[in-house]
Image (tube, rainbow, N blue to C red; front, side, top):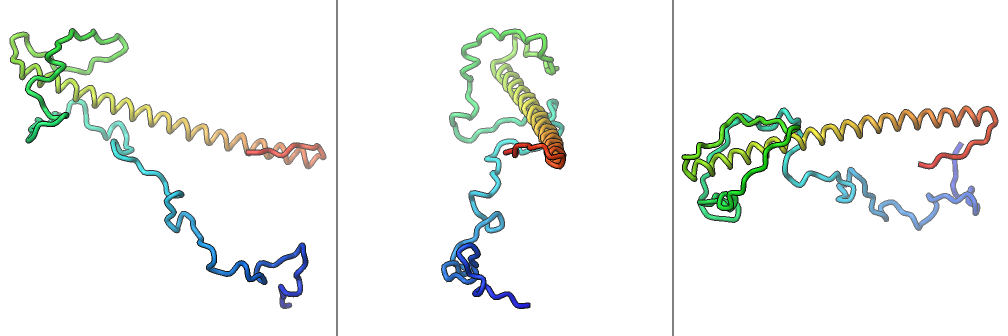
Length: 177
């Protein structure tokens, strides 16, 4: 049996195939496969790539020597500002574990040795900070995954119970997401 759309035309049964308003190719079709910039997944802008804390540089790895060609705001200074101020450092808190095995330079050490030691301490502190940040991020991602799974379980249960109520003739409101 052949279906003719011309014969089925009523105010309530309109066929788009019979209309000249909607012709193939008259509207652009976009979607994830078309490379729309609005639907593309956001990428990291840089910094640390998503890895595990174990893949970061170990705390005991050697630091690289700094060799600067030109002076800049971030390049090595002869005497850093922190060293000129020489404020006494506050003692570490009890909950902060001390992972530093390197002893501070002796009191008779040169200024350059003290500066290098301080730079090493800053490098180690940055490594610890990156590791803590990555561990916290992993913990949060695991929590999001767990909560998403729990949400789906409870949603399924609620919809199942709703269907049971309806099947027994009990009026149940529609859930809105």
